[in-house]
Image (cartoon, rainbow, N blue to C red; front, top):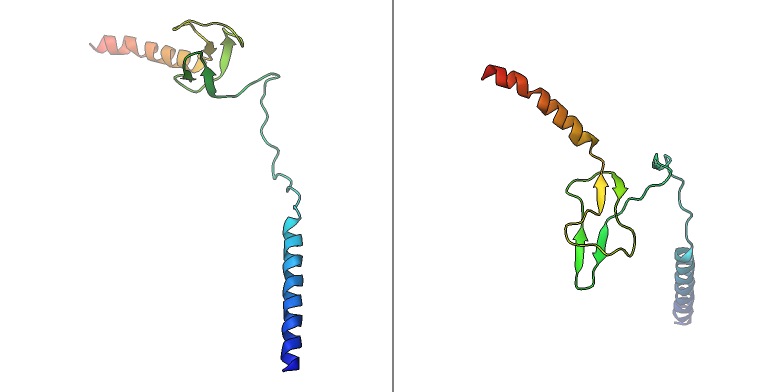
Length: 114
């Protein structure tokens, strides 16, 4: 009986020691692994990529371009008063211009068939 009482005390102490060891091991933070490849960088000296909301006086309004693209010109700055329908920014339209040229080039052959 005495052996069983002493064994239970030793088991309890071992259990507490194991618990403390596990908790101390879990508190250690592993260092961040080095990246496999360098993350991509913007080819421009100054660039901003963002999306968000404009906080208006009355209500919040979501602002987003009709298509994703590079903003080439900003017409407003922080704190400007804007009216409804006023342009806020201009998107890069080189892709759309190229599509327009190719579609306009397809018109004369179609007109000749008619």
